Amino acid sequence: MPSTRIIQIAPTPADLFQAAAEEFIRIGNEAIATRNGFTVALSGGSTPKSLYSLLAAKHATFDWPHTYLFFGDERHVPPDHSDSNYRMVNESLLSKIQIPAENLFRVKAENPDAAAAAAQYDAQLRTFFRLKPEELPRFDLILLGIGPDGHTASLFPDSEGLKEQSRLVIANWVDKFKTYRISFTFPVLNNAAEVMFLASGPDKAGMVRQVLEGKSSPPYPAQQVQPESGKLLWMLDQAAAKQLPSGTR
Ligand code: 6PG
Image 1 (cartoon, rainbow, N blue to C red):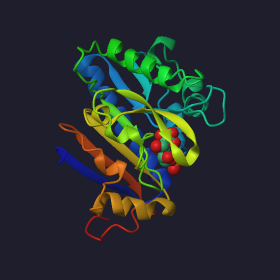
Image 2 (cartoon, rainbow, N blue to C red; image 1 turned 180 degrees about the vertical axis):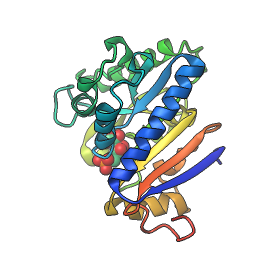
Image 3 (cartoon, helix red, strand yellow; image 1 turned 90 degrees about the horizontal axis):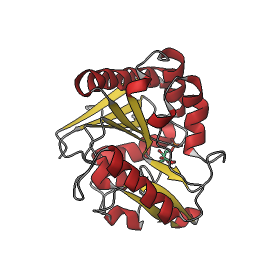
């Protein structure tokens, strides 16, 4: 079991993203104060967009020059494509803050060879974190979302990527979308100092309950995120938490 699992429920989506922004900034200030740098892996999809917009609007003066931004996963598309996680983050955050270009680590997903793009990103992580061959990067914060099928990052049920134990980043074939996704693997996710799941809205309630309460076999990918020696923080709004047992809500 992770060292700590915390479920934090906010009354409204606005409260949720406010609380998530405060937690982001709190971890960031602490990391920069103690290690002179804040390493974050951002999540994609639609949910975190409001968080990124809030960070840009309310925290433009945050110490972005000591913040290093990575992507926990990326779609296999160019950075200007409407499905690109980089594009979403750039439009909602990066284009609105002063962060050195060298602090941004984008997946080169325009590379038609998804495996090569994943290998390149894997090498970038190893270089940035100065890793020895068997070592893992320890992010200060990894943001994650959860899909209706229990996937997280781009680790989907029944996909090969679920089994990966040595590579940090993989090109994971997602059969239902007939495409590759470039994704961090569980060893990276589970070596983070803090993992923050963000889930908002009634559509997420069923899977949130199954992931937090269920004993499904095999476990959903989101259930396999159990930081070894880190904090697992589930940040939910009331609608996403609706089906949780009253004791949890
Ligand atoms: C992605 C994400 C993915 C996402 C979930 C939830 O690239 O899509 O990293 O894991 O977090 O699919 O997506 P929504 O936030 O859009 O519901």
